[in-house]
Image (cartoon, rainbow, N blue to C red; front, side):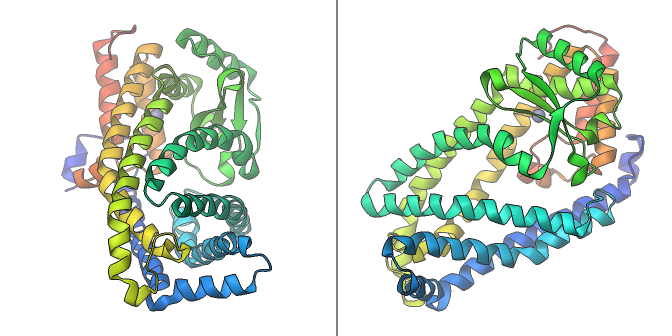
Amino acid sequence: MPQEHAEFDIPGLDIAKAKRYSRTKLALLVGSVAWSASQKLWLARGRRAVRLRSRITESVPDERLATPAFFGVTTTLSWLAGLPLGLLGGWVVERRFGLSKQPLRGWIGDELKGLGLALLLQPALLSGAWAVIRRRPKDWWLVLSALTVPLTVVFGTLAPVLIMPLFNRFEPLRDVELAARIRALADRAGVRIADVYGVDMSRQTEKPNAFFAGLGRTKRIALGDTLTGPFPPAEVEGVVAHELGHQVYGDIWKLIGFGGLAGFGTAWLLSRIAPPLLVRSAEETGVRELADEASFPVVALLLSLLGFGLAPLQAAFSRAIERRADGYALALTGNGEAYASAMARLASLSLADPDPPKPVVWLLYLHPPVAERIRRARSFSASAAPGLGRD
Ligand SMILES: [Zn+2]
């Protein structure tokens, strides 16, 4: 119903194109979820995972290597199987919609780095998980979900410092005037930052972004060149003020807490559902118990099903957090005009569907739809009430 958008115009945004992009991405998401589920089913059925596990056990020189080698092979297989759809969604579609200028070589290079990282981490983590399952058949789910929380904290803080620089170049922001404004803003918010970095995000995408990285004294803010290039300083301030809101409210810890609770629930459910399911499907899969790492495809399938159940909750939680950060940004900058225009620029540069269908928002949107964010910022500037305490 195009007439619905007539009252809401976002400068520079081709709404029909944005809708087309968003429908394409949705179709790709549904396709890749179905594809990934059918891979797991394929590997589980006809005793394929069991045969793979046996063959690997026979061919490794030391039996302790069997489990990591099995997970190394499954990681590589699923990377390979995901490549065609990954190429379509991650490169072809992004280029066709003008959202990326990355050459194919660069995309493939990034994918190979991703595989390298996955091979470094996944076999070790999954072998560790199965070692716990074997040693503690009754309460493995409790041990594993408890271990997940500190692991998330470690990875969450290390990733921006150790992993992201593998894909992008981080360096102190060249625009010293802008850096000074950002520092002053952080001071006003009472957030200590060690440095303001610029990141060459345009290597992969045209979509603007900014984020905090690091912990405590090493905390720094990183601004994509996709943000600092096209956005005037007052709008960059708005975006940074939103990120500062997350810092001030401790949103990272809330997300980790939420993830921890979700992890406990999921692991408990898995411990109830997986063992009887494995017994019932043993004829076809050749796997009788969870302790056998060949149960991995069945476990992974169950985990993604349980993840589906959680997705709407997780998305609603995230949207609430994002709304609050928007409120904080408006109060801190007192500039609803700039915030509204930053959101409009964000929408047009990312081809965001301004008012997506409700069910899509409930299931997938981690931020409120951009039309809602702009409306709020405009009404803030209309009420012309700068100062804290609005949210
Ligand atoms: Zn946010």
